[in-house]
Image 1: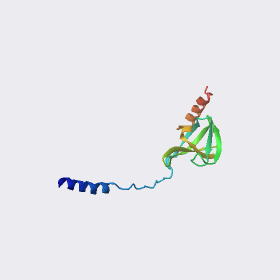
Image 2: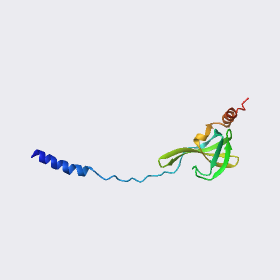
Image 3: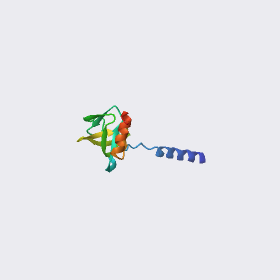
Image 4: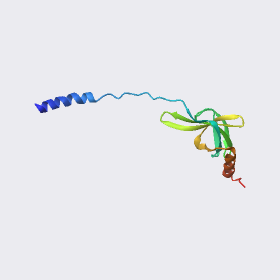
Length: 126
């Protein structure tokens, strides 16, 4: 009798414990400024750097900078693109502005530090 009761309970519990997987929609949040309000400076650390109109590699290219160029970093944004996330700098140089990934710039707190780093990078430091 106990075995039969145990078997009935198992047969009732097992189907109830197996539930369908619920698809949860992916929530895409807008970019989040990490730093805003303080100006910092950046030095291009790659041979050629494409400045994008928006923080996305598929966007229109505003201009191209060269290794050692100084730029003003206006803000830093954390961009969540589904399973991928990245950090983008919003930069300006000579009346042009656009977006670059954080890995292509070295950032500094002052223009003087950035200028010294640029000269060191280019090998023009006396």
